[in-house]
Image 1: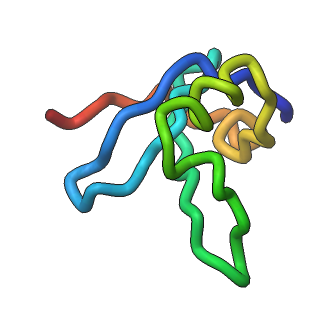
Image 2: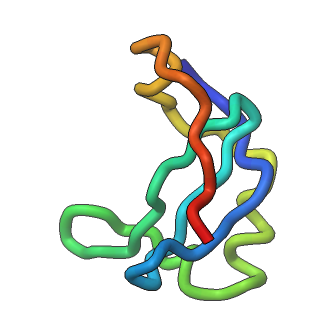
Length: 70
């Protein structure tokens, strides 16, 4: 199910995580050649993707909302 990106945070390992409008989180790593997401490396790149949609497999599975770990 497609859901909009509403924000980002860093996980404990320093990887970027997209916060989706459905209250689920999804890692958005730049890890070529498997994932080519150069935009995640800069603040302006991440900002440019706010409102973009990602496929949320957690919604497809009816998973409960995620909780951010400080």
